Image (cartoon, rainbow, N blue to C red; front, side):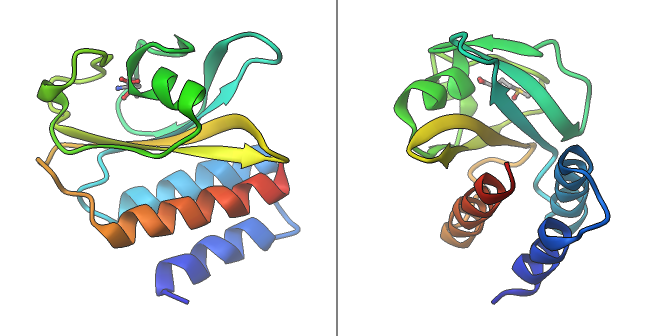
Length: 149
Ligand code: SME
């Protein structure tokens, strides 16, 4: 297991922190360890409503605290249930801009018991920065997060 997965596991398995704090610590760890992760946060489905609500995050404050299903990259992942990698946000028509510095984005869904309950969203100030390893690590992370929710 990679070093970062080990550290993420330690947070996820800790008996000392409530879930919300674990998610916050995960955001901090990813933000610290991967220099091109410049905004890292979680969104979760708002009950039965077709909208996402911003959860724990690290990075600049965002106007997008509520995102309707289908809107932006996050809203599209809420509908598709599939990872969405955007190497260049300027190529996207259905995109919600959080910061003019953001050049790329990756959103990975959190699926629990077959249901799409939320996602991790990462913005980068670098063009096309996300590697296959990043994607694999984030998909692994979301599967692990689903277990504690
Ligand atoms: N860019 C996202 C909105 C969320 S912010 O990046 C934090 C989108 O298009 O869904």
